[in-house]
Image 1 (tube, rainbow, N blue to C red):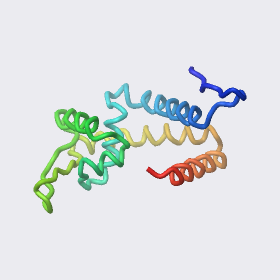
Image 2 (image 1 turned 180 degrees about the horizontal axis):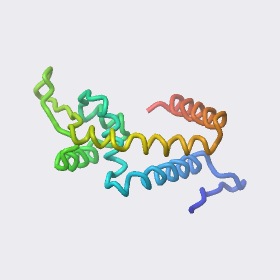
Image 3 (image 1 turned 180 degrees about the vertical axis):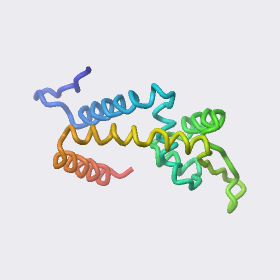
Length: 147
């Protein structure tokens, strides 16, 4: 495994540590999703849409932290695989909303326990108190940095 680059003083930068932590957490989740043929980016979209509320493409892009062009291509593939569907916004016919399909909802229900166990495993590796503290620190960091 790659180690975060260290600064001249020997300590890894916060940016490098955050990147490496994200990379490892992502790899752990991909190990759960890949065998069942669900790409991580698709899973993130399905999780957001699982509340069965439609989202505009821009709202969905914000929710899954993707750029619109990349999300548009992903949604095209997900529509082709019957995981999501598009519909005109009933309040503004110029806008398209994305909804989870029955197939997508079944996928979420089938995998959510496995994904939750993986997430709990990652959190428990730190211990309950340290895990909570790390989550609090990351939430503070995200809030402080804005968008």
